[in-house]
Image (cartoon, rainbow, N blue to C red; front, top):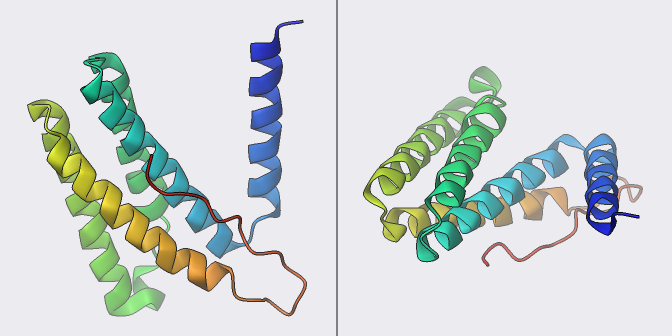
Length: 144
């Protein structure tokens, strides 16, 4: 038995189960978790001079921010907050792109902090009891 394949399959089922059972706030927290993980992997790639890992991870972080967080904003219902988040997400993607081109950890660290701060706010909202029937999302460490 290939334990690596089994572990990946188990992980995939766990993620799919979590996504399938999460409420909208929980899904946003998961997107933040994924973006933070990708930025941390990019930082590790930069530190270890693994440019492939850095590049793939920056691309993944940008994709999560653009296609997940930014695309899910309801600019009409969200009003000014949604517009501010949209601008912040755009800024984060620009910073990550420039950081990747310049091989500079500082902008990546900045984006990781911004994501962690936003994640904590969303986690606080998601962890409020919803009629006592919904479990709060698991709290995870945002930084590696």
